[in-house]
Length: 241
Length: 267
Image: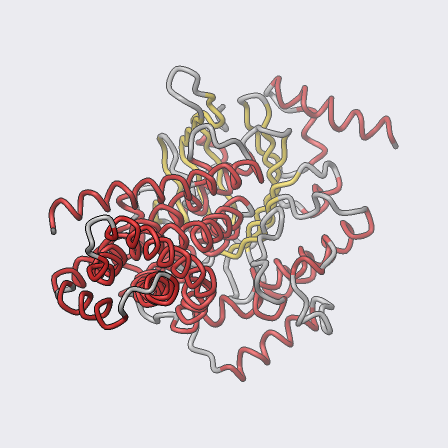
């Protein structure tokens, strides 16, 4: 898998770069995920707003709601939930697509035509994920904060000025940087695991053969990338906070 | 499995491909199954070599070794005079430019149309303009009687049409050597004859070296200048199908008795 990552990143530097394929993948990973990200972010933000309100209300600190919601979303929930949603939606599709290409000898056909499969279709997926996931995370953060505002301010009656003032005072560049770094790392992890499992579908022990092997590795890819995201979330928080 | 290296390896200049003492095993340690055991043979330039044998005897493994998709456990695989076993990735890519391959399932890119599939090697490996690519692909489509199917996807094609599109793609870069992996598997007798006629026509026109892996015995022998038979760890090479029953290798004689005897009974 290490060599796979090396060739995937190396494929980005090879000429001619497939710009159209990159745009297609950004459309699939990024644009195609906006709806699911929007609803996930809105509900996560609204739950945070409600839960935060009831917790802070006990201490008479409802004014801190904006700060609590925004920090939680920017540093933790935004990058993590975005990565999990993209892994479930686009990661599984990428894994299955590459797995089917492998078992139907389409990747062998590319190699026989002396076309580098990494440059041709794997590297554009890597770059598309590295571009799309941080942008989706930013959308998640904005929509999530709006959800928290709806639940906290519009439903529970927290002062709107206090909500935004708390957010402005507590969110620093360091917090934003942490969220951005996490989203890049998670994007790399999920695209690496999902494309790699599909690419090596015939070499994975116990995966079976044919269509069964593709379904097995697709499930494995989503589970493994989700676990990797959660583990690296802790590690990055511990190191960078 | 040994093919008697001395007698069947012609001089390098007349051989397009040579296997020298090649061995290949599969499976986990302790349960390894040796598919090829010190196999030696050569494929003469500009001629048709048919590799035949039962299922699981290593026919497709030989094709993958020729293409460098698999590495042998030992031995040399020479394309021209270059050993592809020890080659780096870039050099292997150069050697692969000599090949065209028709895969068993055609291996068409299912998200691309017929036109895009055939144009792919031209787009990726040449500097032809869009106009030139269109002209070349249109000419190929006409030769292979595929005109009117350009915008179809592989899932919309019959088995025979998929093979024809696969052959069209394989021939786009004017390859010196074309490898056919079970070109008629899954096709009815009419379509099989059509594919063989297409093969004969294109080879006569382009003069490529052909390696055909098939179990369509004995029909495929009609195309062969050389026949390589594999069975139960033995390999033998013939220039005439009528000599097969007189092989000195017991397993080859047994294979001939089983397969060709059945054919004689049917006839």
